[in-house]
Image 1 (cartoon, rainbow, N blue to C red):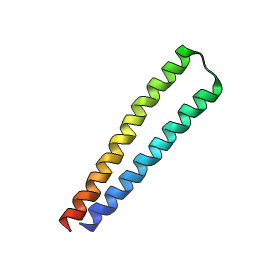
Image 2: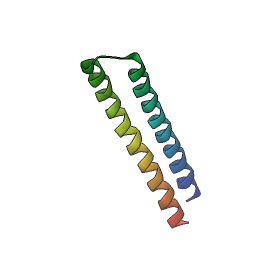
Image 3: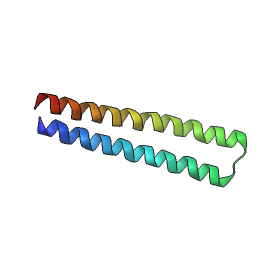
Image 4: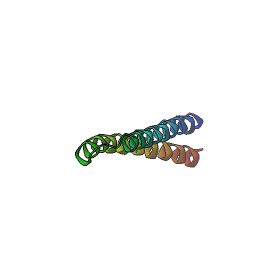
Length: 71
């Protein structure tokens, strides 16, 4: 079960890295000073990536908790 903990930790770290990447994309879009339509279009793409990264992080945390319970 130790492997499950490590796999979960890696998935969680990848998910958190994805969240940081989404934040950087949103901040870059804000600095560019786009108009409302362009900003909305760009942020809609970021929302999909953000939800995927959040889901991956949640699955990783579930694997860690499951590995701890089964140990």
